[in-house]
Length: 58
Length: 366
Image 1 (cartoon, rainbow over the protein chains, first blue to last red):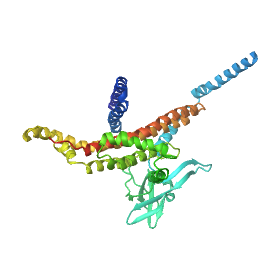
Image 2: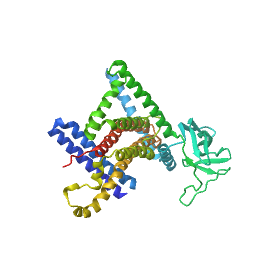
Image 3: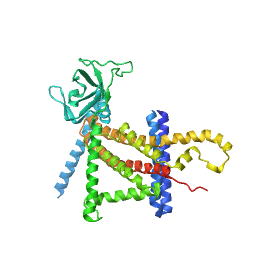
């Protein structure tokens, strides 16, 4: 149970970083908005998958 | 004017007092009983499971009988020949269904063979030890999928026909769907699969996107179906992606898995690396669709649990405060779920396209 909590914290931090970095990237290059958003969603989905795997292992 | 303002103030104080009374009342009166909590838990897990009938709601009447309102669905079993009967015979597990000379009973959502009196034996871990026949029933989930399939077939064929009438200009509902179809083609399929090969994957990508999206949306209606939150359904969808990826894989795709370093090294130098690399690459083939199936399943399942729990709050708070609170929260979560329904369909389509892109890749050989 504690491990699952730790994983969720990690996943939260990971997705937060992905989102934050994507925002920065969009700020720097507003033209690449679409591409950055796509890449962000894919990365976030992959991280999220790990979180769910941990939750289901409980 | 002044008196009116006083009156409003007085009204406000009465309202204020009324608002807080339930807190005081509840504090000394009733703790939520453990029975209610387990009942809500059972209700939620019952909702998450597939069912043999399409029941809309149930209640207990004055005589203490459970009354279920809904539509029975066909139960199809393979047990020494095909056994087809209506799920109304099962009486939600309360009675034994007699079909010909055989008896079946519903226990914890599964059909078991029993004797005429309906005895079910359990092992130490409370699992039924009775024989379970091969079950091919049209369950609630299957019926919803049929419904969505028919809806999609009607919607998109009539959409396609409308283009021939208007000469290429979208009309009616096409104005809503055309941008979505174009988005999937131009922003999902083309960049991920490549200009040359995206065409042959478009059928699957469009179908899977709308199928998942519509099923997710159907799960948010009061019909209470939970199809995409069923791991068997997402397994089937991910299996399709897995099969298409590997059956359309080019020579370069397989070379990438079994010979990722190519000609950059001598063969004897590659051996120690490949002992690790090839198993990882082979595992990757299976992990990719597995992550697809877990992601969709877990997201939809979690959404349904949260929504049902918030609605359950209404019964745990035994005051009128519970209803607005649970309504407000459930409303907010429902709006997020509307977004998640679209997002999960998008992610599934997007990642499928990405995997197809790997399968369709062709390197230039030096």
